[in-house]
Length: 146
Image 1 (tube, rainbow, N blue to C red):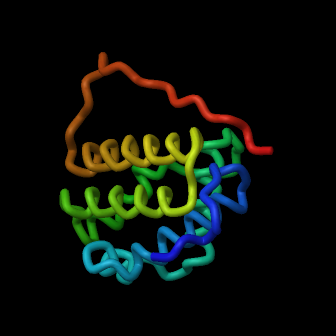
Image 2 (image 1 turned 30 degrees about the horizontal axis):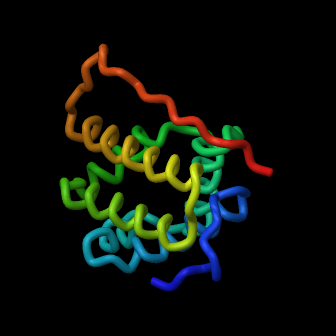
């Protein structure tokens, strides 16, 4: 994987998010562990990339636009091709590598933290494991896009 930019910067704009999402999913689609899942389930990559860019804009910049629940949206995929622990681990590993390749700063760190929380929550939900109701939630503070 080659860096997109000469010097790493923080995630600052929707264009940054789209570049990150495209680069990450390009890698995931070709990955030995994750590729077969994407090949079997994603038919419209442009729609998928736009939806995920909306999701990350909401998560990191607080910009509304994403509609849906990502945890529930993955249930049909999980039913078709059950996710295993190595899928979550590889997804998170590849996401972190992709962020670290081009981005550095508080929003990039928040993206990795959010991805970790999402992977853990998705694994619990799809495996039918409930989290304790009294588990503390750590808020993630991000900056607004300029």
